[in-house]
Amino acid sequence: MLEESVIRLKESAGALYFSRQCFKLNGDECAIFEFPLFINGKGKKMTRTLYDLCGRDERLRFSPYCWRVRMALAHKGLAYNTIAWRFEDKQALAFADYDKVPVLCDGDQVITDSFKIMRYLDKAYPDAPVLGEGTAYQRALFFKYYVERSVTPSLFRSVALDLLAAIHPDDRDYFRKTREARFGARLEEVHNPEQGKQQLYQVLAPVREQLHGSPFLDGETPSGIDYLLFGSMMWTHTVSLEPLTESDDPVSEWFTRMLDAHNGIARQAITIRDLN
Image (cartoon, rainbow, N blue to C red; front, side):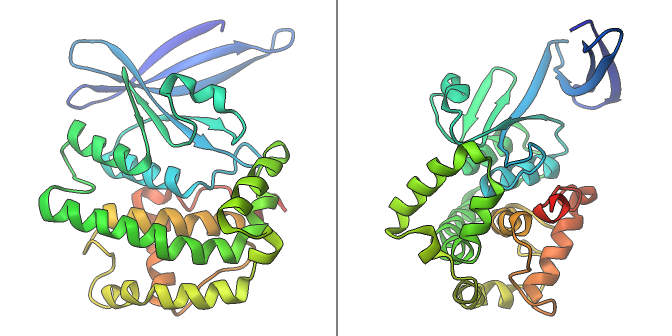
């Protein structure tokens, strides 16, 4: 690195800064990157970093669990940078004593597991709760299990081979081996988009009912329960060439609103359709 300068962006409880770093390339060329930094009240520089799964193109980010955390960070208004990670790169997470993403490094704190990260964010940054406390937290925990055990399997059946095509070539053997062991069948047998869509329509029935009364699952604005489901829906949206819900389905209308939430961070994401 040739040079680093820190740019003050705004005042808050601490202050938000960007580190502008210049890296030498070839000859006299250099590349400039900006990484968000958090300066605490004592003037200590702290970098917030999210380890995030990438696909065959490093810009392709499709992990449902990482998307939960991305939306929670946006909800809190917290700046962060990301490090692209692949399934086979276990050594990169050795510092966290974990072998999956997301992993969030917040100053000297290392937090693993998407739901635990969301919980941590509520404890560390209590303004604008994501999961909440008491009854709200228990409701979110129940919804987490519903998404993971009912919604996600239906989605996977719809896009199993799309996922295989989207991930990095070096990860495909690992992905096939682990997923086929989990489902007890070859991916080609699991992949059944029509059956997956039918199952998805059925399991989303309570979501549809909830959305008849409010624009988001958590009411007038999105929060933790929305992010739990959105992560999984964004997973398939990122890797699939076809939508999995009908355009007039309340779930599709909710998903569109979620794409636009928090200044449209999800709508700006690269999808497989951008790469084909």
